[in-house]
Image (cartoon, rainbow, N blue to C red; front, side, top):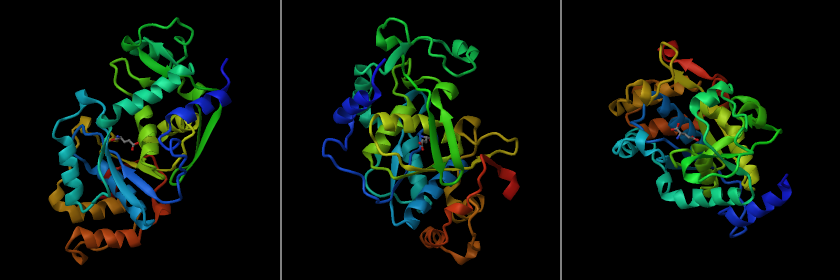
Length: 319
Ligand code: GLU
């Protein structure tokens, strides 16, 4: 058995980018939009971008863009540039430099090394069918195996039998017991790539993110992220998970499902439709001739409480 207090102390004093300077996050609002460059933005991702942009701006905050390019086989080389061009056409101008996750691999590895050092991680070579047979909640069966060459195995972090709770700004109370609900989860995949859960926690801290506004599909990842933040003594941001737009058949719009990419020429109309999905007041299209004025109007009228507390909204329901 390891002593959690000692582990947390060790990790805190060796990995946190903030701990080096001893700085503490202030109450300044810093939001972010963090697309994976697997294709151009589609209407579903526009909703998330708009919600995170407007919430940041309505709170006099900073809005950052992070390109989550950690999975080259699933990415297209032009997608990041295309996404940025789309954001610009929509008038969603970001603050500061874009952060590319591919530039942060050494930092992710050093966090992993810290977890390894204190025996919080272990190798796992279980196959997908094996994990499926466990009911998709990893049963920890590799925990007690002797250590094997790491590069051929996924690296999992040990979870604990403790309830992790959040008050989501849109969805309200949400809780998971990681041991029971997800099991030990992967920080480095079998193919050697760093897992989203580790990178997102590292970067939300690195960029001092205070508010994470993103799609409902990531609500169930949040307790895992909070668990890592707690181990690393990082601050936990506020979270708001907005509904996912589904196709008429109830499928999530995703690049993999060949959802149409947004037509940026119709920026004004798209923003107004997106506001409708977000439960916001919507103006008349011909009241505005440019996205800047429309976004300013939307910022003044922004009400996060009005966002529907739903997992999904069907695309046809508002047309
Ligand atoms: N990269 C993720 C996506 O495109 C979003 C991650 C996040 O917002 O935490 O769905």
